[in-house]
Image 1 (cartoon, rainbow, N blue to C red):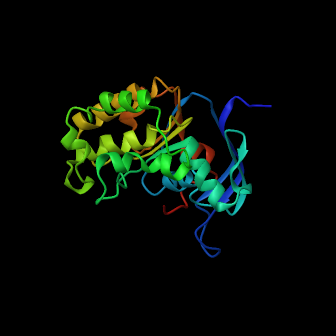
Image 2 (tube, rainbow, N blue to C red):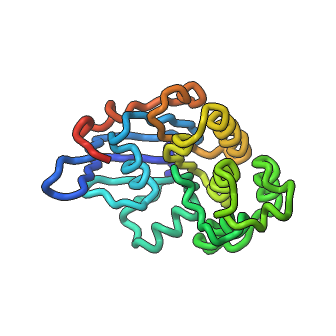
Length: 231
């Protein structure tokens, strides 16, 4: 039976080593399908660690993580990577573009790793147009290392959305931006996810962004290890 949740976490524990305090100790947390969640907390509270677990990059010490009704850590590592590429769009704080690849090549990374290989051309065109990346063929062929911060940001969003993922995970993507560019980023994020009805989990310590989201979650309220973590 398909649940009404995109993400379900139960009895989750994670620590960087056995001699250090737990970073995360989350008895129960759920994210409803199609919700937009603003997850906040101070720097060093474990937000990025939790996102990396939800996207299958980090494996918890204990507990269960279900994403789209799939038990994430019952999968083999390569199956988990493919699942992430197909179903989860991740926008990293530092964008994580491959500098020597072009704009289009960076965007095509997701379908490549998910084994889809093909784009929905209408959806790709919609993304490129919405993010103002299709105005110049020269821009699409430019190397990522030659782009401005704003252009890199738009490419990172396009890469996350090109597979039409059910879940978007954004890890402090506005932390290095001024207020004007920050607001533009939020507008672009929601505009480009309207078509796919994706679930959004957006992490930030900047509570000024919270009003854009349907659900606000203080990590300290769900994490019993709050105040003890260092990441």
